[in-house]
Structures are given as structure tokens and as C-alpha cells.
Length: 187
Image 1 (cartoon, helix red, strand yellow):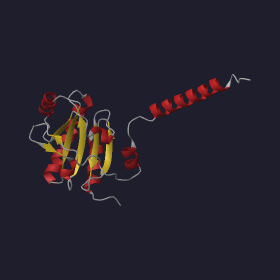
Image 2 (cartoon, rainbow, N blue to C red):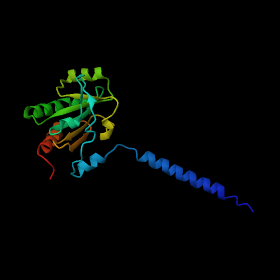
Image 3 (cartoon, helix red, strand yellow):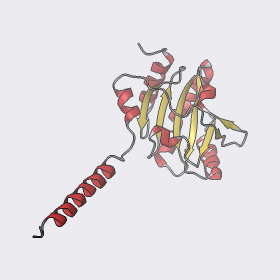
Image 4 (cartoon, rainbow, N blue to C red):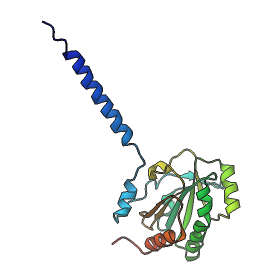
């Protein structure tokens, strides 16, 4: 005698498992917040992508974050089409003056999905004097979980992240983050 309910039951269970797997996959592909969690809990995670060399926006070669080891780096992902990026530019320029004056580091801009000519025009318009790199092929930004702009990562002399701002930063945040980065290694 034939058992009519076995095959449809197996197919239904298989379909339910497949749907559950798809739902799990979709729900777990949000922004990478592992760096954020570590910094929030007081840790200083190693800045990713130290060896990723990107072309300088001014066309004078390439640069990697690793080449700046021993210096404090304010890594800022931006684009010319980003209004909050334009609004925070004076804050970043203040940080550059502070770091340049003391010789302790630099702000390092990284353009995100932007045309080089538009990026250079943006820098002229807002008076940027710090170096910027081009990440039009997204070799660096994904390593930081960057998906929206602007995003800023303050990196200490040891190459560790001490503060993260996902969104437009303000002077108070950046001054505090720089004080932390300049203060030395984490306790």
C-alpha cells in the first residue's frame, strides 16, 4: 500500500528550511558593526586595511594607512555629493591644523564612489589641505563597514581605532577622540 503523505511532507519541510535559511541570510547582512562594538566596549581594535594602497587624489602616487604608522590618523570617508561631508569639512580642517602644528599626525580623506574631478573641486571649495585618497573601487571602505557617508575613524599611533563616528561629526567629538588617540596606548 502506498503512503500518500510522505513525499509532500518532505518537500514542505525542505521548503520551510530553505525559506528559513534565506531569511537568516538576508537579516544578517547589515552593516558590519564589529569595530563599533569593540570601540564601544573600550577596546582598541586594529585598524583594518593597513596594507591597502590607494591612489592619492592629487595624482602623486599611492598611500596606505600602514605608511602612517606612528602617527595619529583621522580617517574620513567622504564624497563630493554628500552634504554632511561638506558641513563637517571645517571640523576636519581644524583637526588637520592641530595635528600638523604638533607633528602628531594627519587627517586622511578617502573618497567613496566619487569622480576624481568632482572630489578635487569639493576640496578646493571647502579649503581642504589634508591628503585624500581615491577608493572608487571600494578596496578600503568595506573593511570598515562603511556604507553611508560621512564616516570617520580615529586611529592612534599604534594603528588602533579609538573612536568612530558614523555620520556627520562635530568639534566636541573629534577633539575628545584626538585627546584619546594622542594620550597613548589603552590601559
